[in-house]
Length: 310
Image (tube, rainbow, N blue to C red; front, side, top):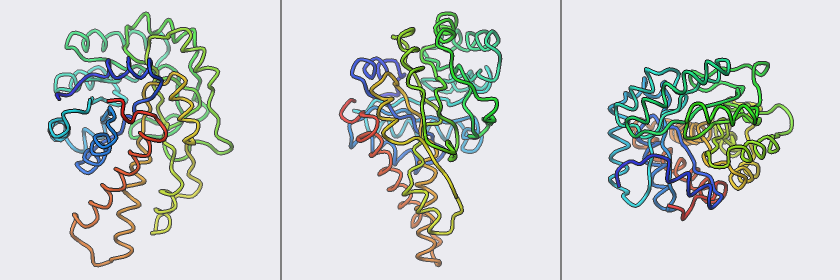
């Protein structure tokens, strides 16, 4: 199956009340582990790359790996998405190089400027058959080039969300209801504003909703990293139970990044701790790929509900 846009995926997710995992990639092992899990779970999947990942791996290498994955698993709908596109030029580059979906993140701008810049990206992407995700509201935390302090974070206003979608024509909307980027999402008890999500869905029922900063920061993976020489104290993410509730409450796309980084790092640390003489990359990258696959399988089957929805 050729790479697809997220349009049909999201229509099905809204109708059947499940979420689709969007997993950040920047190397072969991530792509393979994610797509193999999707194939076994018969789940649609979104592979996504930030501008930092594109700088690291190169857009041609990324696209080649994603295209091979799609060719090897023709029964699984796979979309390739730009995560947190910072400007029109980056979005255009991805559209022109075969991405089927792009995100323009104008959340750092005021409302009117966000509308204007998002509409510019939407007009270009739609002319090429590519869908656009936009963002309204600000998530705290750090992820690649995104850095927002807790004092600058703000929830998405439901009335603004309705106006924003109408004026920009965006295909999906990332909202802020309490998630945050990075491995340190909550200092106290985890809490998401499901009341805001409900109000937004009532106002824009046909617009797919996206959650960024929604990694669980799986405790077992944090413990693995720390057990084998890491130093990640106090890391805390969004509990799986909350993400599952979001998936049946109108969220169509849930971004996962930190959990996969923890899985890869923990698995590699374990190999080196148990065998200090290891130097063959295949010896430590294969266990990393296997743990990535296991982590993605858990998300699709037990949290997002996307298994058997391809």
